[in-house]
Image 1 (cartoon, rainbow, N blue to C red):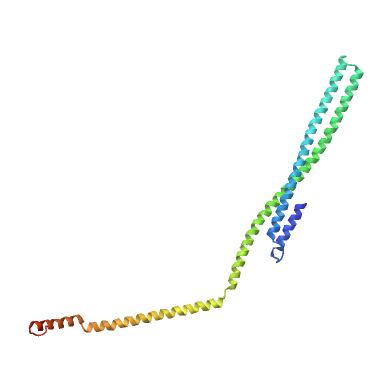
Image 2: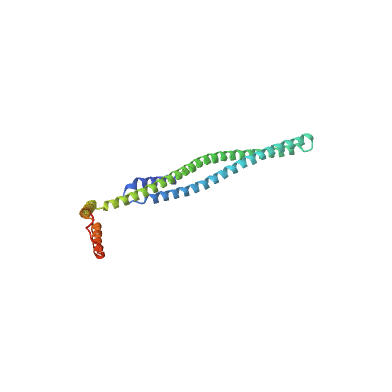
Length: 238
């Protein structure tokens, strides 16, 4: 069937997925699914037509069966009328015979309709199986398509990332980091040196201030000047 050829095409797309220069497997799968859906629509239409013929055959069986019973009943009524003397016996036999012939004809049509219905029912079973197979394959390949799309996205993302990683100059980057590290170490050492110098200056000033109380000496000098101005004599207090 046509859908089997489509499945073969999709299978080829999977086989060629890793080969450069072939048709896009996603597009091929999508086209295969579209073709299978068209086959499904045609299959459902054909199935509906065969089911309609089966139903028609069933109605014909019932119709011809009813006609056969009706002709048989009419033949019996005609013979009963002749038996009662209400009808000429010869005419009754003729009409009853015609009714029975019609009965046989209806029964023949009934048997033909029964044979047709049996064939139609077999065709329906076979077509229903084919339709179910197409549905299952459509569902299968739609799921495969989802997985394939996801795999393509992952593959593209991975390829892009790997491509970017391949462009990175590893040696240059390491060299730059080493220079930055050396610069930081140098700056840290310089900062520490300035700190030591600052601490050293502060220590000398502290020692000088400790040896000479500048504020006290200045106050004593001011005191001596004031006493001299006031004419107050005396020694410098200790």
